[in-house]
Amino acid sequence: MTEPSADVRTSEQTEVPSVPLGQAVGAAGASVTSTAPTVAAKSIEVRDLDIYYGAFHAVRGVSMTIKPNKVTALIGSSGCGKSTFLRSLNRMHELVRGAYVDGNVELDGRDIYASGTDPVAVRRQIGMVFQQPNPFPTMSIYDNVAAGLKLNRSKLKGKELDEIVERALRGAHLWNEVKDRLDKPGSGLSGGQQQRLCIARATAVEPDVLLMDEPCSALDPIATVAIENLIAELKNRYTIAIVTHNMQQAARASDYTAFFNIDRSGDPGQLVELDDTETIFSRPANPATEAYISGRFG
Ligand SMILES: Nc1ncnc2c1ncn2[C@@H]1O[C@H](COP(=O)(O)OP(=O)(O)OP(=O)(O)O)[C@@H](O)[C@H]1O
Image (tube, rainbow, N blue to C red; front, side, top):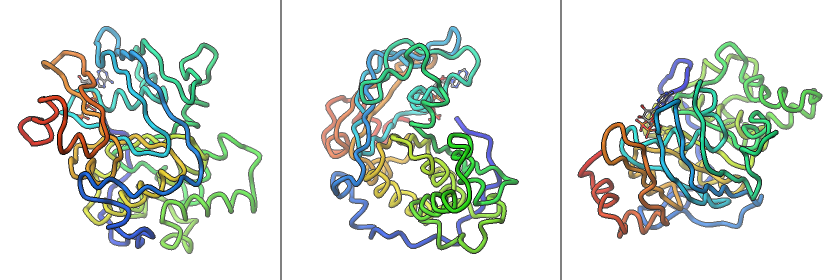
């Protein structure tokens, strides 16, 4: 699923990642170097989750834990419900008319679907980065980052706001590239820079979890490496779930991998297997996982 987006440009200017590639992103099975989290993030517990678009049963019976300060990759063939599942984790799927879930999703033990829970508050705690970088095109770089903050903490202004915007841009490895043009439109950045701007916007409100729906699929390889390295750093502060079609990316950038599948077109998608990424890519338990990761289907 894609989001409305601004123009995507090629990445010409990519800030040098502060984490060396070999250290931050290992080969399949080497996993990502684990460092002590600087901020203890929250876990998501999903139990018996079914997701519907009206009468269409899109995802069936998913139970899984998304562990704190880890990256969990969601993989599987097209249409098996990865994006739908991801969006149900912060109630974003509800923006589609007639969409609903049955089952439980808890953020550190709190049911995000409990009656009286404000979906906007849930989305502040569980942020989303989309496939196509989607900065607000006419807004300045500064205002793009400040946008979520202004919605959530409207009294923030002046120096305090400046500091948060700078921190978010530094955290997204973008500060050095944009610090002299904060008043210029976000749409004037390259595709990779726009995606890092979207990550800065998502992290400025200090969520507990970051959901990423194919965040690199519109980016060139250099911009992709920058985002993957950024993800490896972000897990020190956040819990991350990422949908990707790129097997190498799942192997490089995630600690855990969940494989989704559908039996037949029109059937609901299901979680087939979740394990640490090394196991999924070297000795998966399910033959369907093996077939998918070895490229025999999907
Ligand atoms: N807004 C919607 N309304 C109705 N059905 C939808 C909607 N979005 C997705 N679906 C259906 O739900 C199922 C799962 O779609 P979803 O986009 O979640 O799969 P996916 O695994 O993320 O696919 P892809 O890898 O191609 O993005 C598909 O059958 C799809 O057609």
